Amino acid sequence: MSEEIMTIREMCDAFGVTPRTLRFYEAKELIFPVREGQKRLYNKTDRARLKLILRGKRFGFSLEEIRQLLEMYYLDDQQATQLTRTYEIAKDRLADMVKQRDELTDAIKDLESQLRWGEKMLASMNNDALRAAAG
Amino acid sequence: MSEEIMTIREMCDAFGVTPRTLRFYEAKELIFPVREGQKRLYNKTDRARLKLILRGKRFGFSLEEIRQLLEMYYLDDQQATQLTRTYEIAKDRLADMVKQRDELTDAIKDLESQLRWGEKMLASMNNDALRAAAG
DNA sequence: CGTTACATTTACGTTAACGTAAAGAAGAGT
DNA sequence: ACTCTTCTTTACGTTAACGTAAATGTAACG
Image 1 (cartoon, chains in turn orange, red, blue, cyan):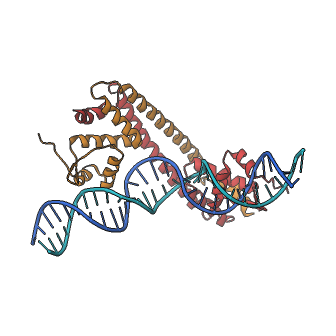
Image 2 (cartoon, chains in turn purple, blue, orange, cyan):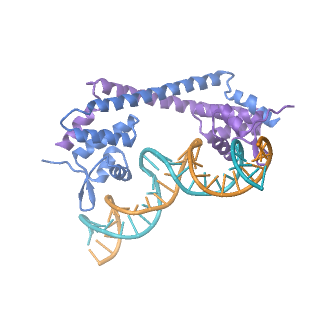
Image 3 (tube, chains in turn brown, red, green, cyan):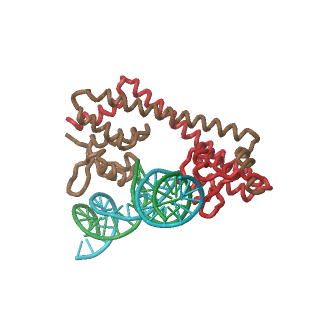
């Protein structure tokens, strides 16, 4: 059964990460490549995990959160016990993201109105403070 | 002319910041309270600047960016020479924020679809990777 | 004068996710 | 044997915006 093993460099090229990053994830117990002497060898499982890690990052999960999700599934395997917990974590994260986005949206509106309000933004900044500071 | 001078604590209470924060901003040359012996005294100008600093932070400017904006106005005072530059900076920042928000929006959509797609998200995470890891 | 309350300076600590430098090992090729 | 390339480990460096602890100062109250 061909395990489709890859070296660290092949992994880096395939996923667009650096060796440092792979070793870092390993140190953080997110991924567990096998050793052949000194060298790390990555199989299909490792690649799948890395893919999930990168996806998790795109979703804004921290590495620690990702590690926990992965660990739960590891402890799980046959039962789907923890699925509900995972679901909650994901929903929490989603809520955070929505909140963040809404705050950003507010700040954007705010800034935009400043930019329009006289075509020179921060002019208000100027008026109160720096006119006094210079005067 | 009443300078309406305030102590560091009054400033903290008024603006909801800590003394450490005010001293930090001073060390970073964002604000310049006068000394009465050892103690710092903040006047109207200082308060205006602090207000602007906090506003800038809400907009997502870094302290360094804020310092530069303030500095430009300081060098400016009578001419409006730098206004155009300030405007550009603000527009850049706005563009960054919009980009960030749009990325967040994408990630949110992505996550939402995962959550719906079987009511258990990250199930795909599971399938490929961890089933293999356990097996 | 002693205590209380608040001020000051100095400087190390914190967090995340790697970057980067140093130095050595191991295999391939000549 | 020598060299080249790629791998390895170890460990300090980076960034932002303060937090926090320690030692000291000083003004006011009683």
